[in-house]
Length: 330
Length: 281
Image 1: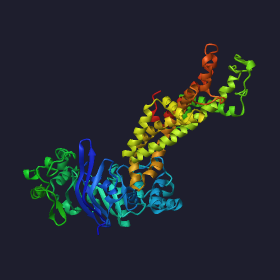
Image 2: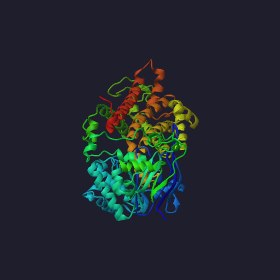
Image 3: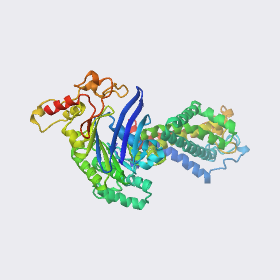
Image 4: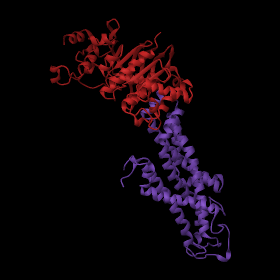
């Protein structure tokens, strides 16, 4: 049985412009110890998916469908029961290490809190465990750093602390929401390497959320490309990247700046025309229709079904054959 | 301003903090000294020495009953401080609790609590206090309770506003993701981050409490004779204002200096605790 299975997840946010559907009919499953990437631009529903799994949607939002951890639906859980899941069975690492720690408490105390809370450890044991964890996440002199305040640490070190916090109770699943976006490039690689090696060592499953295709490509086994709250393409990472089939995925890839290609270096940075659709006024049919070069009348009335282009590699596009042909001939 | 300077050095470099601190310290010392020593017994009447003008025997002279005014003023400081401490404690305890509760629960709980606070806030404070004293019966204790109750909405609104700002911070989301419940987050993460604004408000509320108590006592609803009270002194000398105006000046000056000192202290504390809010001086 899958560790986590998300079935027809729909997240709705009440906004001044009316209800906005941030995630629509999203389904995926994650086996124990496996890694899944969710990629897409800002506002495509990546983070809302993560927050829905954690039961941490904003006050004006709610989720429908099912989020099964083992055989229980987390959406049926009360707030109290969710507190027992968060940090204990599912750990989460956030984007902003600079602001994700309370400036008034030492990092040691903040890491220890979850262990005292979920595992009933006493202060002394928890502290020893914190020192061990800080060593594991590669912080030098952990026995000293345990008494440091967040402002005494660099951004990379703070993200290591956040990772230590997320791992402290040995969760089955780690959700990393843009864990390296706020860090500079050399630190990014260190942090991702750290996360990946910890995942392997501890046998955890991971959902890695990023807008960065390179980060996704290098770090996860399966990938979901999201656009406007829906899945447009998904499959094993290598299969998907070798054969990008949805016009949106292709546009996203084409928009990555190339620095090693001298001819490309002289051309303008390629973009996808238009902007992300207003989630409160989504078009019927394909979400990408207003920005798509392949759009036809058939795209407008109903959302395109998901079709397999190769086993396991699914795409939601009526014009997938034309898009694939053009992409491979590019 | 060098932010690496220690807290106390920054305090001492702040003019209104120093002036307010000195006045407030003077108020507290006066009250403490009066507990063990006053030049005369502040309640002892001497009808042969009425309206004695200021002299070395009676620094501020005597009143219509021949009591030493300097001694009454000193002893009155006790009353003011008691009123301030007790009523601010009442207001702060309930107000902060309600504010934190509203902020942690949001939704209907927040609406009910905050609209309740608005409702209380809509009454002029002193009118509310008079209403409460009228209901509870007059006397020092009831006056203090009334003043405490009318400062509850002040603390509740302040706390809720400050707490909501903290709840929106990322480390709260991170704490929730670690599985902490709303109560733990409130106590461990929200409250410590808003203590400074509460302390500043408490100082200012202390001054308002002294003023309110003086007003209630002036109206005869506060401290009852023979407890020395600055507000009642003002009331008692009201009829003699044309015969001996100085009698009214002394308690008036005492009240004004105390309130001024506490307000300056509050302003100074706010600037020192949170330099981002500091006005350009």
